[in-house]
Amino acid sequence: MVETAIDGGYLPEFVIRRGIRAQLRDRINTIKSTSLADAYATKMKYVELLQTRPIAIETAAANKQHYEVGTGVLSACLGPRMKYSCCLYPKGTESLAQAEMAMLESYVEKAQLKDGMRMFDLGYECFTHIHSPRVTWLSNH
Image 1 (spheres, rainbow, N blue to C red):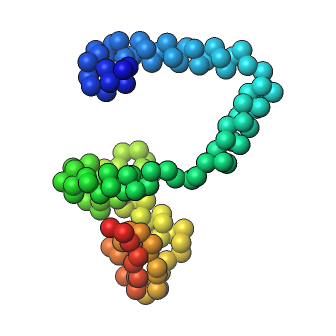
Image 2: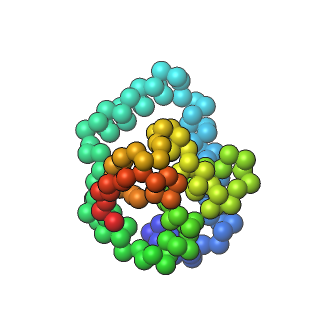
């Protein structure tokens, strides 16, 4: 019921912010009043719970939803390279296009890729515009 009211846009922003602040205050008070040993025990219980669960659930539904998003939506949100994993803003003033290239260049540097190398790209053809390696792609795109 609460989620419907919030997600549906029925509540004014100031009410939502008040609710968020109240939840944050409660969380801070809980953290303050918990001993380090109790906090660690709670964390380890959660880790144990996570270890009993699958890494990913509802993967078919997630893939279906992901691929239902049209390229128009993605091109409106992403930069010219359509890179949606992450970007790098070394100075903090870069455009999205520059940040995409900076991240791709950091991949090339970290992987020590050189022109003419053979490369296997699993998932996304993002390196071809930086260097001219011989690339084999495997992708579900």
